[in-house]
Image (cartoon, rainbow, N blue to C red; front, side):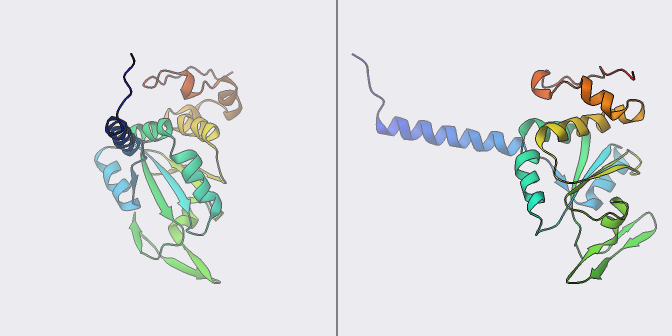
Length: 193
């Protein structure tokens, strides 16, 4: 005769499952830093910087947070290859960087921080993602919502320096999604042709 699990066993199993799920989820989030923290870390150990420029009122920014940035594989890759910054374009705190002072500028009912304007090359649009090199120079700002697969291609394109010698169209044609690669293996397999 089959034994039926007791209600206490079911409750214990459920609590254990929920607890382990929470631990795994906590380990698979992007480690967001402030601008200052990313700059300081990059000075000690150079690494590319990724900046997510957003506003509190931006619906597409919130959608990108949920649909793209909360993906476990993306979080793991970003944490291994970038210092990631969440930058509120409307932040009022003054930022000093490379001898320049970046301040909040009132513009109508809202405004913007001048660092957001510089990082987006004057095209304030939300969300805008910006990739910076190891010397904290702008590689490229990219405006608009990006779904998981498209963002995955972008983050690997810049992290692995394909942008230096491979046209984007060639990279996209030859790209193999991370779900089809070994989780810890990312290699340069795209030719310049």
